[in-house]
Length: 249
Image 1 (cartoon, rainbow, N blue to C red):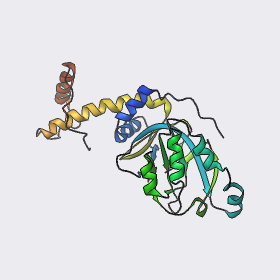
Image 2 (image 1 turned 30 degrees about the horizontal axis):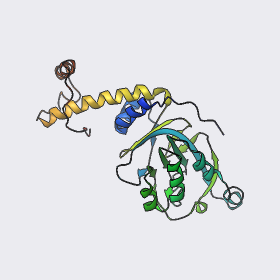
Image 3 (image 1 turned 45 degrees about the vertical axis):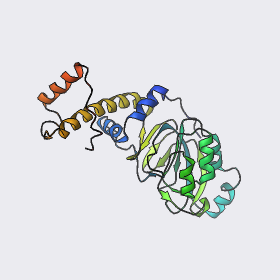
Image 4 (image 1 turned 90 degrees about the vertical axis):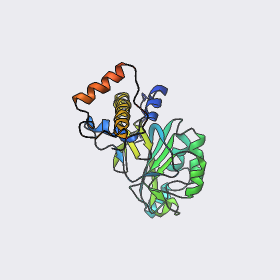
């Protein structure tokens, strides 16, 4: 077991990451050479759920009768993880992408919410899905499944580097989730990436407004020198990009 490292997720940085879309953050990470940062195959249980938080990790191993007898009952790793998740943390569960079994239900979702957790992310299933969604805490999962934990999993350990949805997640990593999915941000890059994503959002909004006015995208997306000069001049004059909504490039 490892200890969760100190995080730079200040209230100011949290606010920036909350304002930045996952798509924009992913583009900035890609520009910095990071491609393996997506937790694939997970969706929010309830429409409109978003979150920002630091990772606390939990790992399940494949079901084996003797191991489940030794590790599956009592105060197991799953229960310990939900009892110890801290305010602002995201409980990230490695379930090997196994959709044929649940990794949490409504009782544990209530416990995570009571602890102040930012979200739960699992590449496995969720049982009592409607009740979990009603709790209110953002839960991103591979989908609902009625089976209890012991059908496919043994709760094994917590607080270590795991794999979730094809991405490596370490305790203390920063996770951001929205309707597009969940992304993992190395803490050392979080401030830089957040600032760059928000700057790009402003630029994209300005471009979207020009397209809405009837301008063709040629030379505008990406901006050529002429359009860039116009954009910079408007910024220098104190103007803000016109509100045309996020561009879905």
